[in-house]
Amino acid sequence: MTWYAKTWKNVPVMATCESAMSVSNKTIGPKSNEMFTMDLLECENNVDTKHQLKYTEQVQVFVTLSTTNRGENEIYLFSPSNTKTQILPVRINKSLFRLLLIYLI
Image 1 (tube, rainbow, N blue to C red):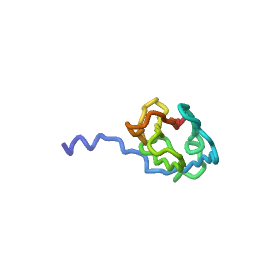
Image 2 (cartoon, helix red, strand yellow):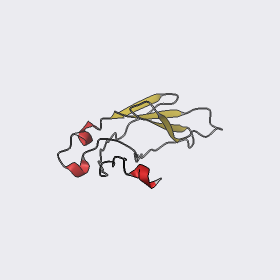
Image 3 (cartoon, helix red, strand yellow):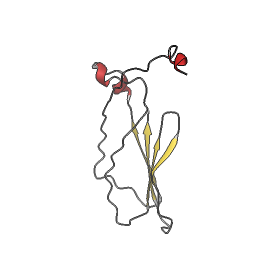
Image 4 (cartoon, rainbow, N blue to C red):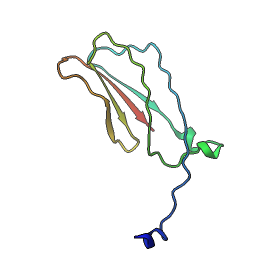
């Protein structure tokens, strides 16, 4: 197997980029969907090569959410290729829910 490694292309050096989105005091009503998008092109075009991204392999999302009814919120993360990942599932015993969608562009 090691002879295969001689022809492999090395991946680029790992880079990190942070982008913040602040939506404070946003009220999401019952049975409603709210979408928030983040444009990460600033990471791709960053002047500093340590923060210049070509590929995204890992994403960390920090959400601060307040609600009066526990378990009725549901959060999904959508990738640019439309891969859907559930971050916070709704609790089954709740009939109402709120949906927060985050899109990465």
